[in-house]
Figure 1 (cartoon, rainbow, N blue to C red):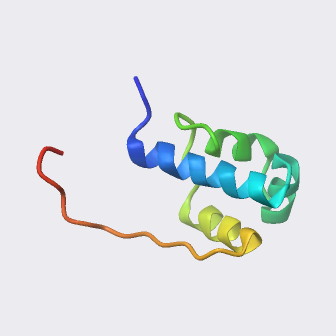
Figure 2: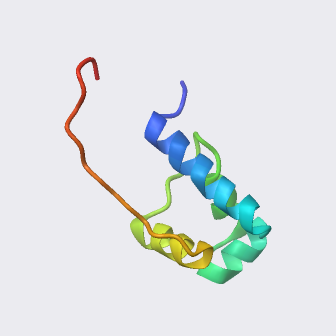
Length: 77
C-alpha cells in the first residue's frame, strides 16, 4: 500500500528542507528535542507524521512559515 499523497509530500518537504540546510537528522532532532529516529520516520513517505508542534519547530529551524489549508475536494477524489 502506498503512502497517502499528502503524507508523501510532507515527508518530501521535510527531507528537502533538511538537505538544503545541510543539517543531519541528528542535528535536527537535537534542535527540536526529539530523536533522530523520529526525524528519519518523518522523512519516509510511509512513515509517521509529525504533530503540529513538531512541524512548527521544524519551520522555525529552517526559517520558513508553516501553512496548513483545508480546500474543497476536487471531482474524482
